[in-house]
Image (cartoon, rainbow, N blue to C red; front, side, top):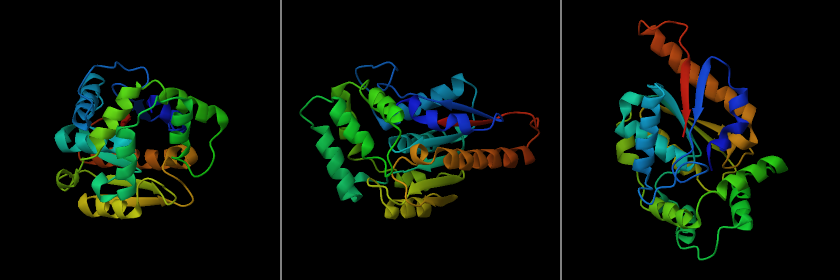
Amino acid sequence: DSRRSWDTVLPHLPPSIRAVALTQRGHGDSDKPGALYTIEQMAADAAAAIDALRLGPAVVAGHSMGTWVAERLAIDSPERVRALLIEAGPGAPRENAELFGFFEEMSVFPGPIDDEVAREFQVGTTERPLADELLDLFVAESLKLPPDLWRVLFGSFLDIDLYEGLASVEVPALLVWGDRDALVTRAEQDRLVETIPQARLAVYEGTGHAVHWEEPQRFAAQLAAFALSQGRSRMMSSSESSGRSKRALTA
């Protein structure tokens, strides 16, 4: 996906939130360098964006792969993160046989990534059908990712395990998960809540992996309330102007 994944959410956020959606390297219309497609590098890119746009410390939201980026950012650059929103976050793929098998299959996928493959991938993330124009947009963005990069990325996911680092994350974390998620499990959410000291879980019933596509208004309201609550907490303990905008970054 690209920053366009968040088109369903951004219009529903209040003007008091300065929201910035990033397109990761290699994705969408971003640059496509020949190497360094790791979660660590993507987190470093997000850190650079926070610094360049003077967003920090930011409430950082990530979905699916983006949750690893957000989590890695909080582990490596805690001074840049005010809070985390983790939507449909995987744990360690080797502990989820179905997810690991999917990643393994995609890492050696022999054919081209055409419209049919990309469409099947995106449809598999939802429980309820998306509007045709939205699905077409997300498929078109997926096809901007070079075929070789699909394989490189999925191969790099196989050995990810951030639990040890997450145990030291000290900021509040809100986990959002749909109970019809076909990719990540409730057990993974429970372990993440147990691992991150200030974490809690919000479950969306009847919703699949892409919660922010299926329930954008509800998701946006929850993201806004969470982000604004972190802003109020920070202002209560500092001398910042009460008129300063709260910040959110979607990875």
